[in-house]
Structures are given as structure tokens and as C-alpha cells.
Image: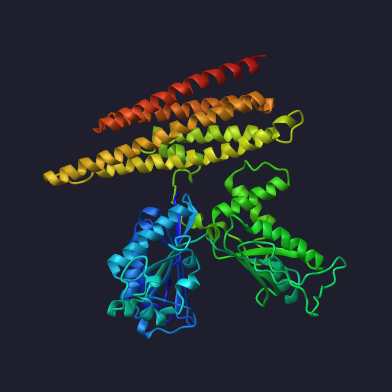
Length: 561
């Protein structure tokens, strides 16, 4: 999955009809999902959050900016928040399968279209900034909308895209700031006290800008020569903005923070440190809460961290890792934590009807007189079973007497097996989705030469895509065979037969995928695609045959002895 978050802020927070019209543009774009709309009356500003793939998120952002420019007149705007345009800011955030560099490119494409198609001055900021001083949004927006008229036309304020002069259109729309930034996690840690001073002191210690009072070896507050308390210039964590407050609803004090780069300062590391600091002050942490959304990666980082601390295997199902993170950090302390409502990827996850079935339901569906699910989905399912068995044998080796030397290897193999298992499970539905797209092509009209050509092109494109699904399954099977081989050789020998079955299931997955590649290639007209794909598939299958025979021989010899 490739997923980008976009968080545009528009300069309207009071007129719901305008807000609804602007956000409606997002839902017109394929693949984009509106997650949150947060209007503020005092600020006269609405924060909008939506996600989508890189292929369509630019279109959604530009459509939104166009509608905001149509409905919002900056000449009549006032509010408590700094602002520079109808669509004031439009940052892009990497969530899954994309990098910050990808988001920088997306920001540039969006800014260029806003500038050229909409005639709005567009400035790039943060990671997308064209010059160092514009990394800071406040510098780009200096003087706000009221200063824009005098800034345009000056070389130092030339927009990255769009008009560099004041005109009636710019007077109405203002300027838009387009950026790329890391995901912001709003995070609160709960204390077993109502004393806000304790929470604030901890906040000052952990936040990047510091400000906590320094204490001596006797835990007494230090004073400088001027008699004033000595304070830290820098806190414990980068990319952390924190303070303390009292929440009436919960009846507790909280250390509240924004973590602006969870790759450098993840929530679980801050949580453990706050637990220490609270204990030093006679308080204790009872739990914590995510405000808004959190990326799946951050949850998996936390779950893995606590599993490692407990000397447990982290090569377990993703749902178990998420559960470990939620329990370790007390995410249900003040309100139930529901992963499907808090983890951004789970909110937009594509429905996968086949793998959500029970085993009986799947086999019943398979046995009916429809062509899908078929052999391709079964091949992928066999791959998932093989990877799952490999991970199981590795996990059954961890902590067992006589296997001390292979503990780290088995932990790594279990984790790799889980990743492969999830890949193959997704491919079960992907194969059927791809087949259905081919059938959609055959259902297109063919009454005119133009319709016939469009139909042929659609069938060819869909058939090539359908071929790539079993090819991807085939490509992954050597890695599963490698896991099966290693756990058969060095894993728990009480589970040797399981390792052998993992190898057989992987071989079946590879063979089934190979069959599906070959039959799909037979209906294609692009000979270059056919030849390259067949050559790759032949090479992988030959590799699989050799490896499978080797494992089969070794496992049988061990079992018979």
C-alpha cells in the first residue's frame, strides 16, 4: 500500500456550507478518503485531513484549492489564526510505502498546478522549501495576507509558482503554502495525580526547547548568581513539544505533547522516560492516549520494542504486535482503544473479502461455478500457509533448551515469515481482483472500431496486470523455501515435519503461480512483455524446483533416521 496524508487548512471555519463544498471535492477523486474535518469558529479556519495514493492525491489537493478559491474571499476574512490565503497551507505527509522525497515531489507538482492552473501564488515550505529560510512556515507567511500586496514583485518574495504580482484574483485568493513534513502524533500521558505542576515540570524536561529547573545532586533546585533558578536550554527529546495540563473529563493531570518526527522521537520511548520522571516525583503513569491518528509503523515500532524488552519473539502476527503496544502503553486507560479507528492505514484499508472468510466459507466459494477465486488465489493461500508454518517453527525454537546459538536467527526468520505471510494473504484477493478487471474488459462495448480498439487495449492492460500478481507470488516463494530450509536444519527438531510441510506448501504455491503466469501469457499480444515475463518465471521456477528437491531429501532423511 502506498499512502500519503494531506492536511490542507482553509480560511473558513464558520460557514458549514462552504466547508462541505470544499471537502466534497476530495471524495470525487478515486482512491482518496476524507478522514477528518475540524472547523474553528474563533480562528475562522478548518483543518482537513485526507489520505490517498501518490497517483491521485495531487488531483484531490488541486480540486480542493480550486473550490476554496472560488468560495472564499480573503478580502473579507478575519480570524485568530495566522493565514495567507484561501487554502492557506497544504502539507503532504508520508504514511506508508512512500518517502519524504516522494512527498517533496508531490508538493512541487501540487504547487505548480495551483500556480499555473489556478493563478494563485504558491510557496514551498518545510522539506519542500526552495530556500533555507522558507523551511519555517512563519517566515514564508510573514505579515500574512495583509502584507502580500507589498511583497509580490520583490525578488526575495517571488513565489515558487504562480503570479508574482497583485491582481484581482490574487486579492481574492491570497497565496497558498505547499509543503512536505513528517507525520505529527498528538500524544498524552496520564498521571495518577491532579497536580498540574508535576505534569508541567515533566513536560519542560522532555520537550525539545527545554526550560526545566536544574536540580543538584541533593535534588534541590539550583540558583544562578543572579538568584534565579537555572533552567535547561534543551530538553531530552528532539521534535517534541510538550507541557502539562489537567483534564476535567478524566480527572487527571496529563503530560501533553506533539511529536513531529516519530522516527527520531517515537511515543514509546517518551512514554518510558515519563514513567521514570513521574516516579521520581512521587507520581506514576497510568496510561496514555493517542489524539487523532497514528501510523501503523509507529505502532509496530512500539510493539516490537516492548516484545524485545520482554525477550519475546517479534515474529508474530501484526495484530498481536499492535495489541502489545496498546497494552504496554495503556492506550485504553481513559477510553477504549480501537485500532480500526486510530491507525491511519486501517481506516482506509481495502476490503479483502476472501481472506476475511472462514476456511469453510472460502472452500465453499472456491467450489462454486465461478472462475474466481481460482488457482491463482489458492497458490497465494498456499504461500501464506508455508510462510506461517516457517514462522511457527522459528517461534517454537525461541527460548528452547539446546538452541541458544540460533535464537537471534530464529527471531529474524519468524519476523520475515510474518511479512511474507501477510504478502501472500493480500495476493489471495489481489488475484481475484485482477481477474475481475480482465472480465470487465471483455464486457466493454465493441460496436464501433473505436470501441473495439478501446476494448482490446483494456483487456491487454488488465491481462498484463493479472499476470503480474502470480508472478509476484512466484518471486516471493524462494524466500519462503529458504526459511523452511533454515528452520529444518537448525530449528526445533520436534517440529521438523512442520518445516517439511512448509517447504511442500511453498513449492505448491510456486508451481501454481507459475501455471497461472504461463496461461495468462498465452492470451497477450505484447510479445516483448510475454518474452521477458516468461524468461523471469522460468528462471524462478527452475530455482524453486532445485531448492524444493534439496529440502525434501534432507527432511525425509532426518525423519527416517
